[in-house]
Amino acid sequence: MTRSKKTASAAAPTQRMLRVGELIRHKLAEMLSRSEVQDDVIAGHVITVPQVRLSPDLKLATVYIVTLGDSGTDEVIAALNRNKKYIRGEVARSVNLKFAPDLRFRRDETFEEACRIDALLASQKVRQDVDKD
Image 1 (cartoon, rainbow, N blue to C red):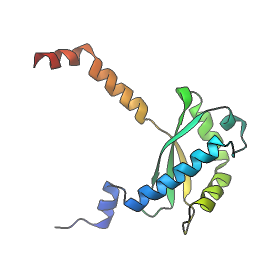
Image 2: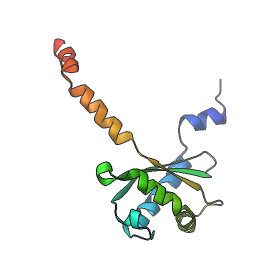
Image 3: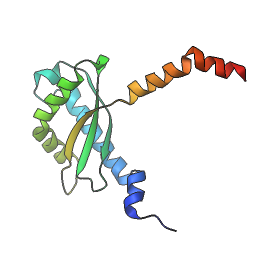
Image 4: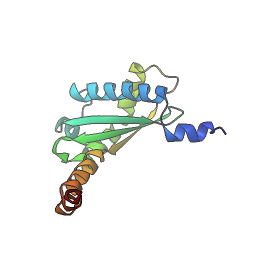
């Protein structure tokens, strides 16, 4: 019994998707740290790019963004979307692909989710259940 390519790629990213995602992430982090994107909103925030996920055909890149203190993330995403054409062009020059991926900017909620889980594990009710054993 074999799995089709479509379900296999949807389940886990391929090695190439991961590698290209990391190349894009590094380029974006470099651009943001060097203030290459000329925008007052972007310049006024410390932005981290923890992850870039690519579609299986490498034509769509979802860029996850975190701002320091989680303040102004929506404004930063709007500013990145305003400068998407320039950012995409710079990424295309540094990452050698047949097609430059279209960039989508999203808020990264994995840190918030991890804090929520930590709070649940530290709650009194959970500690009572653990102490029973």
